[in-house]
Length: 359
Image (cartoon, rainbow, N blue to C red; front, top):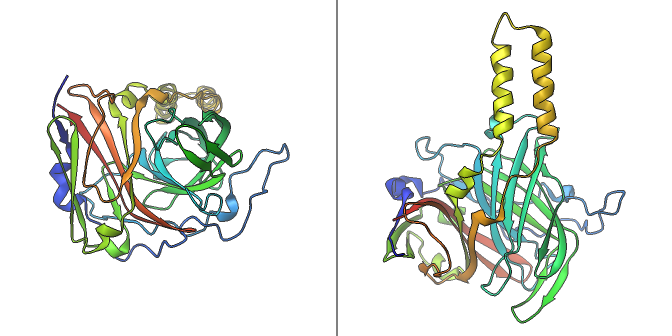
């Protein structure tokens, strides 16, 4: 089947893809922790999410603050980057998608979220996906329960600890342990730690050095995505890598995330708004919602994640492989992160996400 792709974000391309100036700082040594907490464990010996580095420098990326450009809802997409302290020679960048029960301003302690993270960089790798769920902690961080997956043949556990900073959810992730991968596909070290940044859908973030820059998107033929840089000066030539991924938005929306919890919450709110409601009925509704939140089971499925690959930073177009199954008229998420590396330093130049239709 052949068809063209149309980017939804084209309608806001003139303003929605620019960033405000002055919002970010230097991101040299972006995810190089200030103090080594490699041996941090829980009482049962499992690695903890590295809370000691939660205040480390983030990427310095800034999003446009124009009120009509985007709306903060309960879906976020972005990237992780392996810490160069734990993988100094081959650290990598991948995509992360998070869906929360409510918008950040309306999340409360105990409210739930779900996510998916991809550790797939080359065509020859397995899917390498983690799916996970968790709750908002008393300190206002999204902390996931331990997730298990096989990554490049190695059994790993994974958890995240993310905090809303007004523009996105940011924070560390942990694997069970570092692992050296050396097979017919690639030679790579799985870093035990890294940092995540996820932002509202259909937004672009730049560093301060690109505060006047614009990225425009278009399509060509049936499966080719083009991006063009404006006001990048010489920076475009410095980009070493671009991590590109595609997620099936229709498949995400069809899961019906948190449907039971939404129903119970609506029933509780209706009782609370009813002056004649019996207090016992309200208490029972509160307990029912609390029980549903406490016993929530993961709904995220791996099949929503269609594609991820690390490509050369010099490219300004990419043709999706034939085995990426796009359905005519379907809605998808495109996610790009441009970055470079130098020893134990790294630099994220921009991150951009867009919903598009396959036609």
